Length: 501
Image 1: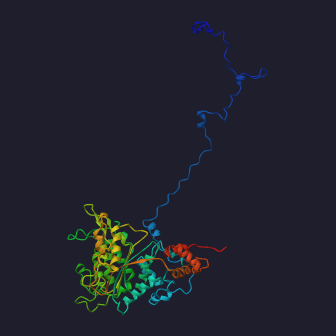
Image 2: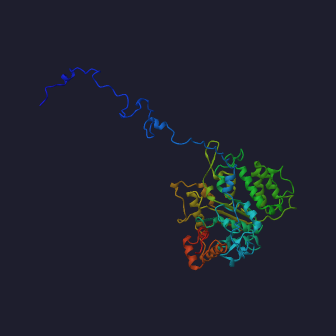
Image 3: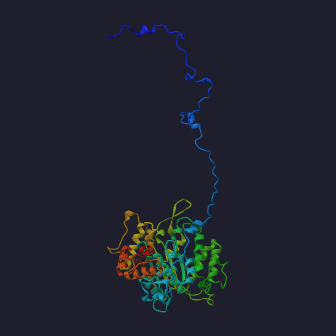
């Protein structure tokens, strides 16, 4: 039932006067028996648990101490990091000395009884090998007492080849051209190093390009060769560095040879009776004429007779060893640009063009008239994938087997993949007309045999790096784990130090 007393009636009621209401309590209530007056008491302190804005304004800890200024470390000088990254360590004093270890010499390089053993590099030769940058930072030279290389089947073949070219037999003055390929860690770079050490033993002239990539990555200065050939480009500083490596490594040989040809481009600089060492140093001191000096030096080393007026001081030139480690980088456009900002092909760089021209047979005479060896290798760890180059290597293999280019089985490039004709033309070499010049060959390095692997692992044990009993069963296991004796994988297995509990 709804009350009849409505809300409007309540609003009509009169409000109670303020005086009738009880007074507001202003003082706190206290006990009645307390004698002191509550209003004079000390105000109560705020508790620490007080919440509100004041809580965040209060200091929560002791006064913070200022941090001492930290001295900024100066960055290393320019080039120090690169020098540390590329540092080559060839000796480990903590490794054991291998007793009875022989060095590479004219006798040991052809001795088949040493197959599977490790031959040391002669100490005086290390300076020459460093000069041509034969060692790589990623190789395990720093774990042994002294640097040495294993003698494998390919090493003995290489030693006999170099010995035959230097000797008086039917192979004297022969020019051999090879492209070395193989899987990663198969020893391609060390194979080139073995060739250099044997060439130095026979007093050859060694010319190397240790890092072909540096010539095409736009890290060095370049300029058009001349107004007549604006499409060709010269790299003066890179050429001067090549001359420096050649002079430092072959100083003893170049000192005994004198200029025997006329060089119109260097008519004012070349003097009568100048040695080839002095001629090469002209390009080192003045990079502006480095390319002209290199051409003059190559003409002198390739000379078979003296020009008129130079017969008195002429001496026969020694054979030459030319190595390039990483040929794939020269089979594509470089990072350089023309004045119109068009990419420059690697074959338009005159230094690259010179070394690639040696792959073709010489016109009228051999590409290496005094004999020698041409060893160009590919790289599996730093190798750009270039379809034209892969097809060109297959064609080289087909020519070596006697397959005619007109045969149906001869490998042909797929035109839909855009093959580079310039790359194919470099390796499209006809049969040489000179009997002393051989055809371009393709050599594929594989793994070591089980006997060679055992001798290699015994070298680790004799150096104190391997503490296990080496028998046929153990060697067979490691040989299988190394992918069939890949020497790079065997080194990883052998350098792990194991202790006997």
